[in-house]
Amino acid sequence: MNWILILVVLLVVLFQSAIFILKEYERGVVLRLGRFASIRGPGLVVVIPFIDKLLRVDLRIITYDIPSQDVITRDNVSVKVNGVLLFKIIEPDRAILQVENFFAATSQYAQTTLRSVCGEAELDDLLSKREELNMKIQEIIDQRTHSFGVKVVTVEIKQVDLPQEMQRAMAKQAEAERLRRSKIIQAEGEFQAAVKLTDAAKIMSAD
Image (cartoon, rainbow, N blue to C red; front, side, top):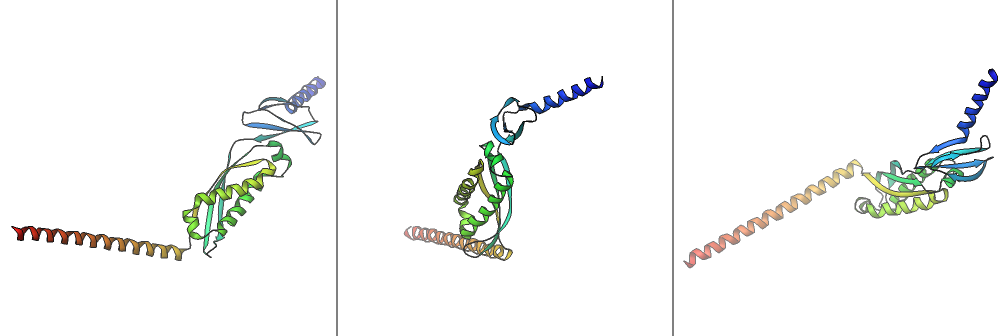
């Protein structure tokens, strides 16, 4: 009786280690005696117990929020910049075999590239040319992650935080600009009113 129980347990263990069901967005990297054998899935996958090892890889897009980075722009302004990175695995075997942790490697590349590219730009570019900077950052990260099977889908600079003193200076500048425009509009209104009064006076004198 004990032998039957042991046999059943062994069969269950063999079954669990030999048969896998991979979802549509999953692939299985099969290592045979420690060496790469194949990429399997989706669906039912059968491997050789104790000889093959199957490592699941998720092919869906991964979202990574790039934490705030301290950056000194080309015109020597200290700012904090954060962003978001979307990427996915396109070569499961490379993601497993070429790097210890593809997520950690990609996230580190994202942080260093964000600092580097923003540090080469002037403050005005950070505020007004984000699309160009986004494309440049994406291209650089994608070149670096290609070797381990990761494709960068998109990169976006989310927020640029300026020093408090610069925020106050920009607020004063904006207020001065609004005041200047207000005075121009008021002067134009007064000029138009004067023109109309002059025209009315001419009409009355003609009568």
